[in-house]
Amino acid sequence: MRATEPLALDFFARPATELAPALLSCVIVHRETAGMIVETEAYLGLHDLAAHASRGKTERTRVLFGPAGRAYVYFIYGMHECLNVVADREDEPGCVLIRALEPLSGLDLMYQRRHWHGPTTGLANGPGKLTQALAITREQYGQRLDKGDFTIRAWKTKPPFQIAVTSRIGITHCADWPLRFIWAGHPCLSVRGRKGSVSAAGSSVG
DNA sequence: CAATAGATCATCT
DNA sequence: GATGATCTATTGC
Image 1: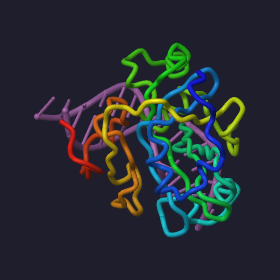
Image 2: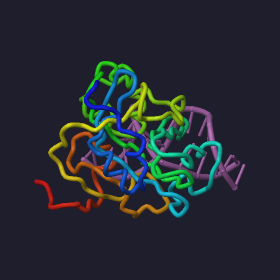
Image 3: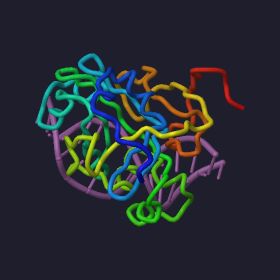
Image 4: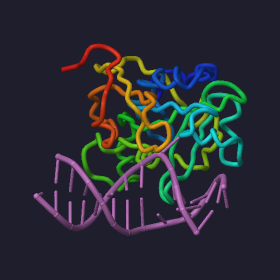
C-alpha cells in the first residue's frame, strides 16, 4: 500500500496528548498489511502512574526515553504484544498506544495471522489483535517508523466521524484521565471501549 | 446481552 | 512471588 509518503520523524516529536488525536486517520503499514488508526491512548511521563515510563528507565522502557517516532512494543498477560508510538523528545517518555485499526490492505494475510473468520471489523479492533494482524512483535522494538518496512502514513481522507475523548481502558491508576481518542461511532473500535462515558469533542453524532 | 474465569510469562519487587 | 495498557470461551439471565 502506497497511499502517501511515510510521516517524518518530526511529526511524532510533540507531547503525547497532541500526538494521540493526530494519529487518528493515519495508516500503519507493516509486512504487506495496512490499517487506519481509529483508537489511541496517550501515556504521559513520570506523573502518569498508568504509564510504564512512570517507574523510570529500565531495560523495557528505555526506548520511551529516546527520540520520537520509534515503536515501543511490549508483551503483556503472557500472551499479547501491544504497539505504542514514542512521542515527544529525548528524556520526555510520552507515548501513544494504538488500540484499534480499520483494516485497509492485505486482509487475507490478516485473517490468516489472526485465525479469524468473522467480520472485517473484528480483525484489528483491540491492542493485541492489531499487532497479531500486522505481525508486530517485540522484534520491532525500537524500530523507526519513518522509512523501511514499518511506517505510518497520512491518509487522504478522514472518516465520516467526529473525534471524541474518553477515559483509558484496562488500567487501574489514573483511570479517569481523558486520554483516549476515538472516531466516535466507528465500527472498528475495541469492543470493551464502546460503553462508558463519552465526552464528545464536538456536537453528538446521530 | 453481561459478567466472569482462565490462559500464560516478562518484568519488576 | 505478584502483577498486568488483553482476548476468548463459557456461564447465566
